[in-house]
Image (cartoon, rainbow, N blue to C red):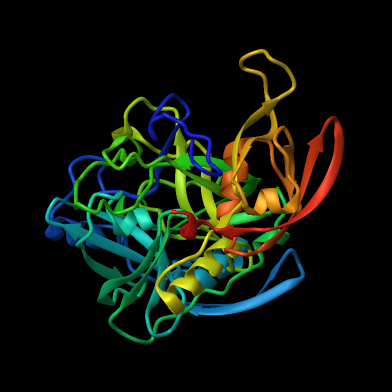
Length: 408
């Protein structure tokens, strides 16, 4: 058991409900050749785009905005709703990605960060699920412009990556503060499910601070093709992600795309879906999708653009799920500290073996994987308030996190 991690042997597409990254090869079957991808994109444009001006549309009767766009089909302006408004605002900032290597190909989505071509997506999109370290990337905008792109940096720990398109005149997304989101708020997912670019689906935020486990998208040093990296020779564990849950339909190909609020502002980066199907090739939306919060996405993308790499917090403790009883299968109520790293942040702050962590800042912790995801989503040397149970009594301790990279 490594530092801050509870190891799981569960395969990424393991027991139902299954999790699948929302990247796609556009068919769910054999990755297409480059020419097939281009044909699919052409076929995805299902009719002429009608340029309209959506003006002063009042969201919830309070928040008006306008968007000049040629990407949203509007046949009856009088029936424009909040989804149309959010899509009109955000669509120009969402792109479709074609990623190919000598061993395969796939499609995904991305979100524009800057006018000069920095784009945020998932690490698993640009590494083809961790199978490739030498890829060719093309970016297609919602206005059908196509650019080559290169990888600036990846962060497999948070499954995020930044690429740089060779061009200018891009439309940056506007970020919202994901820490202020409420369950039940409206949400719109935008991306290229199954290769159908500029697709819009709507729903609500179903839950906050879910923890999911996905396969590491770290590129193998030997350039191998294993997609089950925690079982390969490197013995890499799965990655724990702190995510937003939504019922807005997310499907393979949506990975790296935008989850936006009703004002068209970014609240998350679509990353994975749960599916009850027994075959990954049949994976599709069942109304349980996940997105990396915009605050995490912003921190990671800013660091990658600035330095090419990302820091991650370290608690310095070996942890396991804590339960109310000795019975197997009992609900977990927190993360129990099993062992402390000598001289590490947890020990220095006064945490003890047997403490059960139940909250980090305002985020509830009910499992070891959730604590791992929460700590790793924070920057190295961040200060956090940890609420714990010690001998049945609740207490709060301030901890300055360490640097996970320095411990490797």
